[in-house]
Length: 257
Image (cartoon, rainbow, N blue to C red; front, top):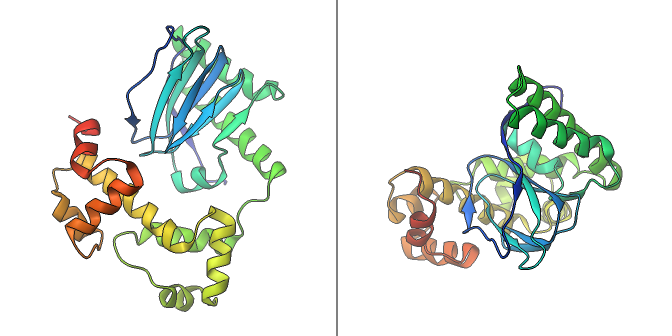
């Protein structure tokens, strides 16, 4: 964690209108959403959360997210955009949802970032980056206290699967590289990620496909070849199964100009 750094970009303070909602959004950077008050829901990567005051949500890069404000008591939100030196480390250690009502230090970091950035104070960017780093480290520490992080072998296996998303990784290859039996590999990854290595590898392929669709002009056929799929048809079927959209639909919604 010594080399982990965070760089602040933007924070806002947004009182939602009644019934306000965003279209499905996919960012190429990490994103935090903080609930100051009011009611509503936040949907991240297909999972919908009913929000409470003090909730802080983490949305990793390239995961779809949607905001739904209540029709009678819409919430007040802050969205925080940033970058980090190691997004894989962030994804492994950052809770998807935390409530800061009992953590005044973490909550004060957010309020101070809002004050610095919105009032454009001297040195606001640098101060906000330090506040953001303090906030993330506090959340990492709380996560460590509440639940043991994935065992190191599991992290290494998952990192290997992520780095080799463009090919089909077999159990034999994992066993040769990490010196574990297939059953042990399966258990380690499932305990850490909640899914089998095969499903985890598929998720990484879909994330890579989303990047190609958002930021390149590669065709579905070219993307399927780049990610080691047996056919463009199978790639399109699996992409729609995991995201709810065909590759073309996803590109039309999220293509970066």
